[in-house]
Amino acid sequence: MILPPEFSLIARHFRPLAGPGALDLRDDAALLTPPPGKQLVLTVDAMVAGVHFFPDDPPDLVGQKLLRVNLSDLAAKGATPLGYLMTVSTPRGTADSWFAGFAAGLARDQKTYGCTLLGGDTTSTSGPISLSLTIIGHVTPGLSVHRFGASAGDGIWVTGTIGDGALGLQVALGKLQDPSGFLLDRYRLPQPRVGLPIGGIASAGMDVSDGLVQDLGHMCRASGLRAEIDSAAVPASDAAQAAGPAWLGTRLTGGDDYELLLAVPPAKEPELKAVGIAVTRIGSFHSGPPEVMVRGPGGETLAFDKDGWSHF
Amino acid sequence: MILPPEFSLIARHFRPLAGPGALDLRDDAALLTPPPGKQLVLTVDAMVAGVHFFPDDPPDLVGQKLLRVNLSDLAAKGATPLGYLMTVSTPRGTADSWFAGFAAGLARDQKTYGCTLLGGDTTSTSGPISLSLTIIGHVTPGLSVHRFGASAGDGIWVTGTIGDGALGLQVALGKLQDPSGFLLDRYRLPQPRVGLPIGGIASAGMDVSDGLVQDLGHMCRASGLRAEIDSAAVPASDAAQAAGPAWLGTRLTGGDDYELLLAVPPAKEPELKAVGIAVTRIGSFHSGPPEVMVRGPGGETLAFDKDGWSHF
Image (cartoon, rainbow over all chains, first blue to last red; front, side, top):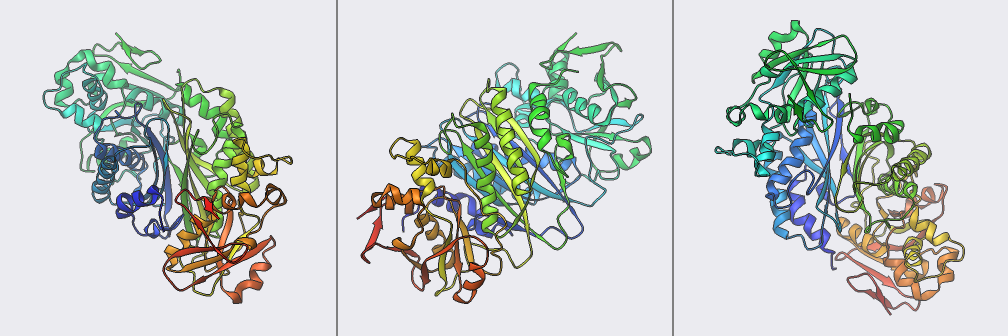
């Protein structure tokens, strides 16, 4: 019996990624027995070539980024990954090596982060490669973290360093030098904070994917609060510091950090500092209309236009 | 605070579709408490303009089709819909009316089939409109139906009529007349068999989406059996009969039926006949290497080439 190329492609590249419940990708649906007593956390992200990645990016990095941007959303909810479903739309004639590389990247990260493929769909498209991934995690009821829930007086905290992804994009565009390659790596391959035990510590949280100022704005609106942050307190990597102060606006408004942005009540700060990774307090929430106020090096207010770029 | 156009689009068109657990689409993930004692069934399908639908198809029908092809997969597993997540990638400048229509189609079908939007992502693309939908349903453990599990001697049954979708595509392409409009309707708007109580009745099952012969081939491989069907027994609608016998190959190998294809042990036939809709026995499973044998009107074997077309 002759099989359409789609099925041989699935068998070669995607079946090895299938985990429990995927029924070896031989059925048209997956079966998942939820962990007893847990809630499920679900999130989905699309990535399109030319929008979210460069068409000539190495396919294993594309696969890893697709999985990691979703893992980052789970991490921000305090959830533990279970599995994922994905759709892959590619132009006719996409090389088999692209699929092999893409699957190799997913395989690597499945091991790193502990999740498996539950199901998927492959189709052709007349446009660029178009990917969509739905991830499912679990959380103890009452311990999930949301964009809403912050209170006036809570500190605003971030994990790791902010702005490396946005600077890495500028490196990829040839607009910034990056002798160490650190910034480009940060742009190409997010490091999601999976497994950070923020449930019961953070009153609100999300990952920083669209840029610190914009994402903090989401938390302000969701929690009905005003945020004030100190630009000098926003942690910068050595490579970002080397880029110089002219890039501050890019660092604060660019995307692709995949660090966590958390609201933490003062009483919970000791617990937060014990989670085992670098966390930095960059400001605090206040009563008032939803707005993000960014203080510059001299205490002045920095303004950002609708494209997110700063004007000093 | 100025919001990017994406957020206003979500608020206007997609927030009204959000159900329990979607957190009003204000968070970056959904929370789902699985029904106690149930297993979850998950499936995903992508639809690309120019491949799965015509770019000028009415957007409400596109939304309905996107949801219904996934509901059909759930129906084939004997599962009850809970909710869905989706990604929508559109070219810049896609009219607001397209999103309004698309959401109206989804809203209509959410009511019809009892499910709500849990989350999503909207992005731009330089290519055609590209959609992906992950649906989640639930089933009583032990009562889910799969492509595997059929036994030699089981009857092969289908719901409704077969081939209308494939003929409807030919109507859309201007290659076939359709005075009643019935065939085109069947192609444009699947009627998924949601809620049909096939658990405990069918030993195996799937929906007919890629064409009866190809899909039956999947069941043969999954169950390790040979299938024999009688082309004259495959139920045809009045409109398909009016098209004439020259279209038999198209009817048996074309896609987009979204009827159910079931393996049913003889002892379960009375229960199957009592499910409340038209079901027809078209053949049976036998021991032997996985293969689909189709008998023609005179008992001869019909052959299909790799494109699925028949040669008499």
